[in-house]
Length: 310
Ligand SMILES: NC(=O)c1ccc[n+]([C@@H]2O[C@H](COP(=O)([O-])OP(=O)(O)OC[C@H]3O[C@@H](n4cnc5c(N)ncnc54)[C@H](O)[C@@H]3O)[C@@H](O)[C@H]2O)c1
Image (cartoon, helix red, strand yellow):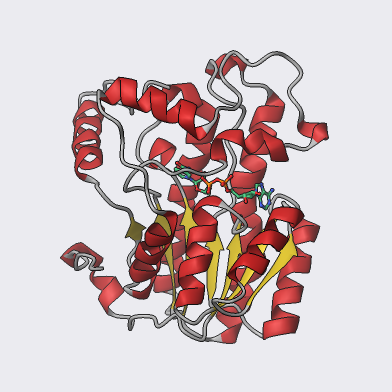
């Protein structure tokens, strides 16, 4: 598996040595399933010790049992949107392992499935931003000072999305806004780590390279009762992967490729070892879209957006 050489514009990456994740301690939020589980698998295959921090205790236990033959993996029930829960996680990780070298802020949810922006309720915002944005913020605040104090090389990898991280899908307005926040924050985090001379870097992950058969589109399963919607949703709140694939097939006119999540996880770890800032694949269409967006902004016009047919 190969990845491209970082561009000259990212020369600061070359100033720090590459990472070797073997013997590193990694925390993966939302690592019990989906994209996170692929990352956990890849980390274990390469000799890391992994702590899965996930709100689904049962799925976490099943994943730990399934993957433990690959290497040292454990689970810790965590709600990343809750400060006390993340403090307990950090204390557990440092008491047990004495360090955290790799922090994957990967847990994420959709807000409630499509809908018109003006019909998104405060609780849609609270839940989605609570997990996607405050989750990243709280984990950063808990772990990064400890990682800095530890003085060891390491990386913080925040999972964003092409939806919002690069351009919005207009029918997923709250989710897109949350991922725009993640991308923006990660850039600031990275720049500050470099500026202060720490051997820590940040990366922003845009899961890509095919459709991801994960639980994201049934994320409502983890929505707490106190943040329930009051009114009916105008869009789809949940859909199966098969339903999503059918929509994508219709829009594109051909059946989209489905990503192998373990292969994707290994690609992510290759990029982490290379200390790449943007972790993504198949960016040609995105780059063209970003050029169109930049040109529209220069003309004071509304930038073009993603059209996924959702
Ligand atoms: N699936 C995609 O196509 C896609 C595309 C771009 C970005 N992403 C992002 O990738 C990340 C992983 O999503 P996925 O697609 O694997 O979905 P997933 O639902 O399979 O995995 C998300 C995990 O996060 C956990 N989680 C949810 N709320 C949590 C909380 N409050 N605290 C801790 N854990 C919590 C879930 O239990 C689950 O294990 C998310 O940030 C998502 O936004 C996914």
